[in-house]
Amino acid sequence: MTDVVKESTEEMQQVLDKIIEKYRGKPGSTIGILSAIQEKFGYLPEEAMDYVSESLNIPSAEIFGVASFYSMFRFQPEGKYVVRLCRGTACHVQGSWLVGEQLQRHLGIEEGGTTKDGLFSLHYVACLGCCSLAPVMMVNGTVHGRLTPDKAVEVLESYRREGQE
Image (cartoon, rainbow, N blue to C red):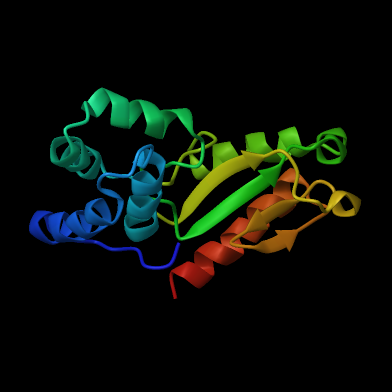
């Protein structure tokens, strides 16, 4: 994500018009349009999908259907810190599910959710490729390994302190 934009409705429409014009008339462009919107806003705002639907005369159900089919699309903003917990075989055997349960309790969110303060998003992933450090989580690209449920919470609390400074 390069340039997360928080815009008024009019400013949002101007951004969307540029994206739509880039793809107008190109068959199968829905995924490209949705990707560009998410790149710009950090997620897919409902009003943006409605605007695309109206602008291109595509039923909103079709736009939403494409967006909800692909796991790469998000319908809410990501947190400042994106936590990816490995659920691969090595991590599972070493107890990543216990780490996940503890993180969900501690953050008060389910997998795929974002905390109310916008600080953390939690995602489970198939493998982070750090099997020798199992169980592993990545926070904004930084790997934290050999986790216990308590150690994982300590890691997140260090990010919380950093995020509030």
